[in-house]
Image (tube, rainbow, N blue to C red; front, side):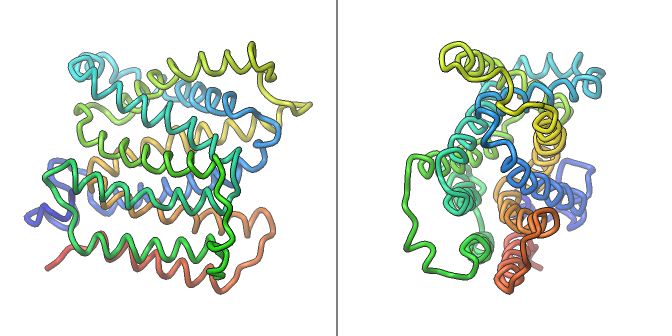
Length: 315
């Protein structure tokens, strides 16, 4: 993780010529796209089965990835073949398992509950790092996570702490909690990823995930009697939304996340996930006509301070 490398220059990561500032900007952009994913997904929850959403999202992302990673695949496939188990676990957790549980959560519980429980991801990252790795999180990272978490809770609860006392937990809440743990595990697994081009890593991960998403999708059509794509007629509005989810959050989002984690470490990167509700709130204000409240500003301030605390370097 980045903080443990005290000898590394503050503007550049160890073992990588990508400036640290660029890595942080990629993580911020990733959080913005994933925050927008929640806003856009609101428009397809009622018309697109979660199996179809998961399948088409990653099939389109893989199709977008192939032309730009083709020149790297010749060498990278040989390297990844030497790390079969790591690649399998990365694709299985990051693409298949996470896609399934996050959409099961979104389809079976409230947005408040999903947002709150997903916000525990950085905590799970730190717990897994503390238990499974020799590079233990620092006290400042723990403090930053808790401060940023308080900011996230402020936004989710709209400044009203009684919201948490009124929460009714259902099956979707369990899936939301599992999704946070799965994403934390995926972030930890990225530290064991073979040294290949980031585009190749995301593309092969997508293919591995599709190996499992495809039969699930076919099952939903044949056995459950779900539509091939959408209940909506005409289908093109849903098609545009899913294309954005594939090109933005799936394609660019995973690319930026994988690269950012490889540079700053999973614990530091995990804190940036707290920016997702910030961007989601901002986009909802801009595109859905929702109002800006004081609790937004208070929550954003706490999140910004928490991220600074978790990622700053001690002199």
